[in-house]
Length: 180
Image (cartoon, rainbow, N blue to C red; front, side):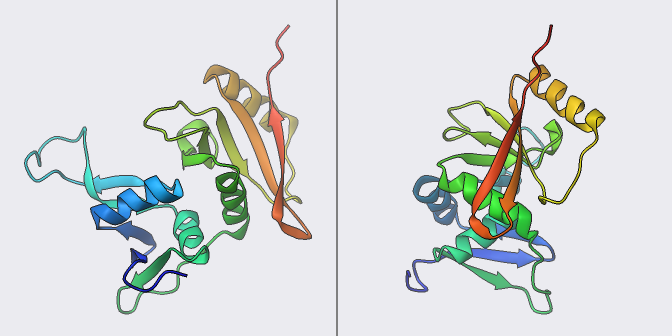
């Protein structure tokens, strides 16, 4: 494990996980394949809203992964409660990350994540991923909607569920629209 000086600093404010140091943002991306969303304004162009600067917002799953893998630490503001992590989403995120995929937020496409084969600055996403508990059920209408959405956006929809007895393995089922 890295010493305290080398750990990436993730600050917790309410339910948000933020990285304020540009070197930590670069290390997350370059060394660990983890990315987030920039939220801050650019000092020289505060009135525009097309480009953003620090801090970088991380998914709770990304922050948990960085801490559990031993290359980051959380700093909480006084009185901030312990962040709540959805363990199903965390296990799916960790599994996909270990497969070498990069993930961004997938809400816009009806999933939890968009998965990329490499850095999203260079690649388009191939998958819309929805993390789900193995006991969760879906209607046929839900499955058809997922398949149609994937075709419309030229992506593959993936339902990903951690195996009940093994947190290192995730079952992934893809939904594709065959057409006639």
